[in-house]
Amino acid sequence: MQLKTLTLRLTGDCNFRCRYCYSTKSSCSLSYTSARKAIDIFYPCFTHNYHLIFYGGEPLLEFPLLKKIVFLAGEKDRSNGKKALFSITTNGSLLNDDILNFIQHHSFHVELSFDGLAQDIQRKKSSFKAMVTLLDKLIQSSRIDLEVNSVFTPETVGLLADSVAFMAGMQVPRIRLSLSSTTLWDDRSQEELKKELERLEDILTKHYKETGTIPVLNYIKKSSIGLFTCMAGQERMAVDCDGNIYGCDLFREYTKRVLDQAEIEKYCLGNLESLAENHHSVFNRTALHYSRFSQDKLRSGEEKCFLCPELKYCGVCPVNSFLSGGTLFDIPPFLCSLNLIRIQSKKRFWARIESLPA
Image 1 (cartoon, rainbow, N blue to C red):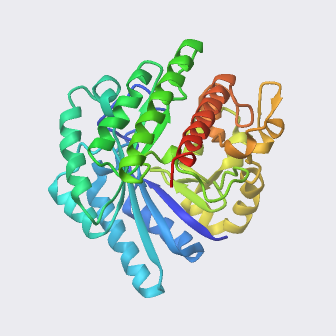
Image 2: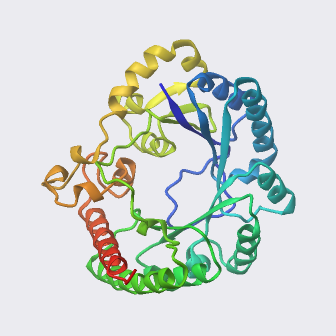
Image 3: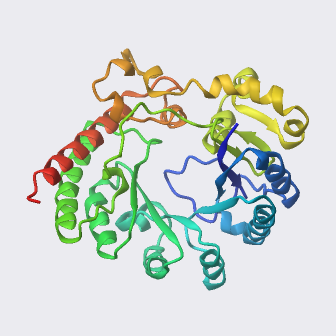
């Protein structure tokens, strides 16, 4: 196994209660003993440059633990000639100057959860102003690799284009747009999404003409187009704060919601103790199940994805499909429609960009 990414859920707790959040909250925290054991178990499988992701809940609630893990990884890397690339997903509310200095020193990739002009509506009331101040600090740091993830719902989709314009005006380098899949998007909200994306195409075209850059990651053209395959349990692993192991943190959410123990055992590799003792048999048991998730094996109702003309442009996370009311292999129709709307928007945008004079 060549492992590119290990995600550590430092805590199940969070100081925000976002309306659309799918994450099951808990008071558990990952112990340093468990974190060390996880790194010891997986370290021989890590690629030369591997990603160590700190996740939650809100991982900065456990900042002292995060620091100890960073130092541990650094020690092991110096002895083994490898390099950890650190990443954190955070709401930013606890990111003070001391923490900022630490993550700058260790060249963190920071994925900041910030919903633009919808921030005060669906994340935490009156947090917008503080987040804008924080964003400005992060943008000014040359040693932080910043990405903003903005989530929009049927309630806030009308703020999508203006939110991107606002963040692009602040010179946010990378913005990822996400659409909440825990709420049904009816025909009316889908039509509003189409209108917002048409406005966004205008904003991005203007931005590209002025700067030569595209700040929204969803609109970046991939160097190659191919079939989407989920690499959970193959190139990446995740450790929950209770010490249980999954091929991806999202599969933790799946196993929390299914009642069938046999189904849980397909995707949960057990705990760190049992994995250390029986890793060969555990990997053999779960690898087959995780290897099934490629886009051509999914469907949406009676429609088979492998027959869809947009197959090579599409990529639906199987757990997102489940959390949206479908199954791991059956995508709810509204989620399929959202994907098609986004695919068509990206195609229109690139048709405009490629028609611009050289």
